[in-house]
Length: 268
Image 1 (tube, one colour):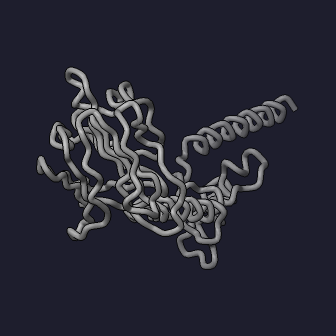
Image 2 (cartoon, rainbow, N blue to C red; image 1 turned 180 degrees about the vertical axis):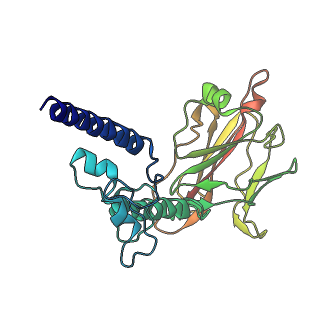
């Protein structure tokens, strides 16, 4: 009995030793390489060989989504680079682009507002002491507004002498070229084709102002001294389009010749 018991104990010991050796061999055996596809749900899903599965569908079943327990996001709707015409992001981009294009196209036409009068290239002629001044490009005058040509003063200097000019006044500094009032000068306005539009004005004397009384009547002028000058103030709508010579004035006193001016008023 003792022999049988020893034999049984030796057999059990051998069986236990054999089991440990088998486990060690199993643990040391290399498993399948990652991505080999030989194992189950822990490997990433690919589209290779799968029909009817889009990249967006694959994204919705990613391992990261599965780990959080949240349904996969629709990557087609949320991607900032989405080019699908049916997505909300695409619709927003199209609206923004069309709005910007509309604004750009409106501002890039180069057309003046409908009520502006373009006097670019028109000329003022002074007779007796002959001088000519050509209005520069983009001389755009609002309806009922003015062009005031000062002899040799900036707008700020001109306003300091005569008073503030309104927003409807286009002021031009002639750089000591025009006008030059010394006595008996008259002024005539020509369009950009050289045709006479208005004038000549009455002859102006040194120290005087001549002002138009009525736009509808070419010969109605008032002559006063320079204190009667009022550049930038004008006349009501004459009821017909036109550009009119409305005022001219000398400026007396030492150095004040720089503030001499000629004025036009424009109605579309």
